[in-house]
Image (cartoon, rainbow, N blue to C red; front, side, top):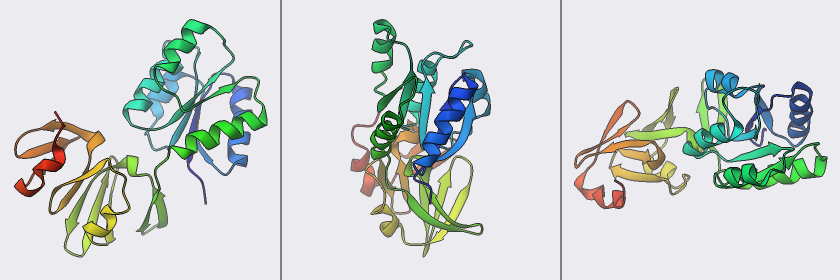
Amino acid sequence: MSRGKVVIVEDEFFVAEHLTILVEEQGFEVTGEYHSGEEFMTNTDWDFDIALLDIFLSGEITGISIAAEVKKRKKPFAFITANKDAETLKHAAKLQPAAYISKPFQTNDVIAALEIVAYQLPKRLKVNTRHGVLMISPHDIVFIKSDGAYVEIYTETETIVQRKLLKDIESELPESFVRVHRSYLVNKHYIDKKTSSYLTLLTHQIPISRSYKDNLDGLQ
């Protein structure tokens, strides 16, 4: 079983291919290999767990720009760099990458960086689908709705129905998930708007019940 889905954004083709081999040897699945920031931003579906990003990319979109978008989605990332420019590294450090991978690659350095980044991954959730058992990252779950003995798990791209109680699945999730109603668990990272009676997460409106309002203290 894969330890996680990885995307690589590196504009040197053979460098990207080499890194892909090293990553897959460590048990990760490389689900995307992109050779420019523009290619990544146009084609990604954000269905990955870890991003490995070259700081300097040919084109207008830099690795630092991509890292900012990855960070917004609470996904861990590492920077790939052969550059020792102090000012650039200062800007990169502000985004708090989990690790750095220096070029040319040393196998042990890549292994160490992957272990550091993977340590930040939340425990994946096991779900049964018509296509078989899947392991999904909690970061990809927008909210979960209870429907009696079943729960509906909403991601940005699909809805997965499981025979499970909401209280049981709640115990498997990280603290970024909060109960806002007896029938709803939401991922705080996806909250776009909050009123006294409902939350907006992407295109969904989720009711807030009086009993759970305190769970949202501190949110704007």
